[in-house]
Length: 255
Image (cartoon, rainbow, N blue to C red; front, side, top):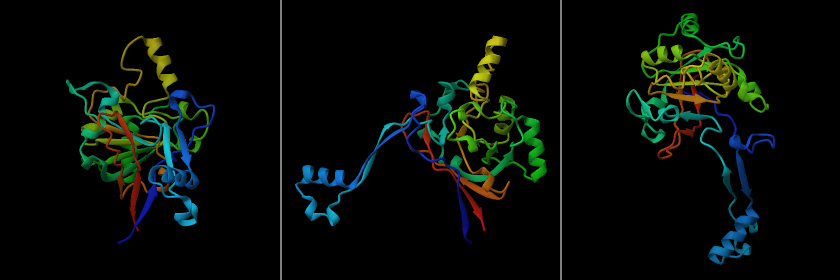
């Protein structure tokens, strides 16, 4: 039986000039002429001995953070210890987490900073008739991928509460993703509340909920998936010791 493949990963491309330096992606492209020059320099083979006088084309990342594209976070990103043990890095996570049954939670009616709660997730699961099983991959659809190329992309999104994150984890979910800049509410909103209340557990609350789980952030095209009845492949690159890694996330929908 054939499957439909839905690309859930955002494009990796050079950042607009106004992007903050810490968030920039910079890619240098070397064309076929440059490849021919390199071949001649390294191996003494002139362009006349190459097809159409061309060598290989290549690209180099001049700046590319592990969190600057569609990526999978490891527990090490959240804290150095999780539940009293050294937090796992991205290369230490089990591969079976990253190919499993998927479910989409529709949160497109949520305003920015109006968080997705446990009650909201339960109600949506009831509506679509999906019973969570261990290792289900839960994807929260906010529709904020519409603003991916906009300067204010990172300050958009409802966020998911720490309580809802814990609720999902307790039901065996180890990978949960969102089509917004971050799993938590926009950082500046969290910062305002944390300063006002002057206590921990508000800023980055769902990240620092002290659980060994993975987030997928900056997804797209979740609206092209059914609510349930599909699989997700989201294998992160094997970057030793890293807090996260880019991933080509794909929804696999049976025809």
